[in-house]
Image 1 (cartoon, rainbow, N blue to C red):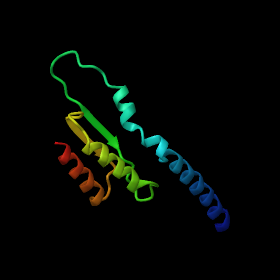
Image 2: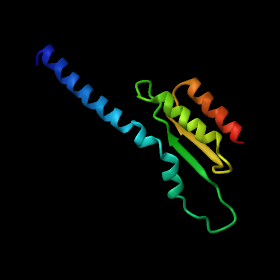
Image 3: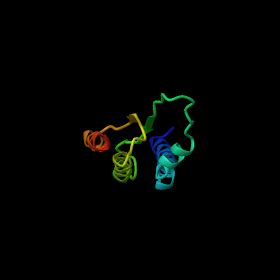
Length: 109
């Protein structure tokens, strides 16, 4: 295989992956995450309950809408009125993202 052909193949693969990532991370897919989580909640059968939120924030440096997504998650977390007992985030790669989410969680109690 020639170098030019390899470059062309990789360019096509990169374009396809970029489109897939952009489609997956566009606002319609993540903007309503809390509504879906609330609709899937199982009612506890006893007085003891533990509510856990685990969310992959898709914080990759190449992820589109990252700042908007983190802001929306932080805003939702800050308005948490006794909704979750434990919150865990995945793929919060950067300190400023983690700090924003930490501060929002603390303000919620």
